[in-house]
Each structure stands twice: as C-alpha cells, then as structure tokens.
Length: 125
Image (tube, rainbow, N blue to C red; front, side, top):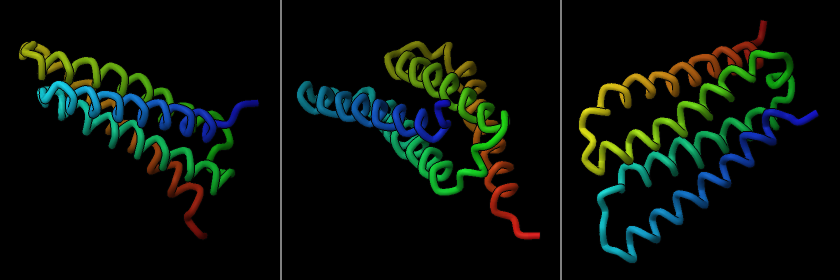
C-alpha cells in the first residue's frame, strides 16, 4: 500500500523541478512576469509538500486512516488549479482573480485539516 508520505515527497520533487525549470526559463529570457508563479510553486509545491511528506514519515501514526487523504487531495487539486490560474492572471487574465482567490481557500482548508491531524497525532493526554 502506498503511503501518503511517499506521494507528498514524490510530488514535492516534481514541484521543485518545475519551479527550477520556470526560474531558469525566466532567467534566460529575462522575463519575470511569472515570478509569483515560480515562488508559489517552490513554496507550496516543493516546501509545503516536502514538509507534509516528512511529517507523515516521522509520525507514521498520523498517516493512518482515511483523514490524511483529505489534505492530500485538497492540496494536489488546489495546487495545480491555483498555479494555472495564477499564471493566467499574471499573463493578463484579470477576470480570473476571484476564482484564484476561491481556489486558494482549498490550500487553506488542506492546511486546516493537516493541523487537525498534527494535533491529533502529537497531543499528549
């Protein structure tokens, strides 16, 4: 059975490679229009997903049950849609600002559920 930690770690390195590729592309072309996308890919993708994965690896009981699937899927879906919308907004599709804000709430919801998992797994009675 695949562990949620494995999936987060795998997606984190894919995000890191994507963020690095975008950064290199921006540097080569000297076009920094997508710098916010680059930053969000690195922070939400590489850093956050890596930390999620490492937490689940260090505290295996936190990954038990169905609850960890909730922040995983909320994070993955919100991240992909959010990066696409943010890129579109930065490239001039200002009408997508409201949907971008709404999909960002998916990342907040994922973190809120993850917070419940962290406290549940680490709280001492």
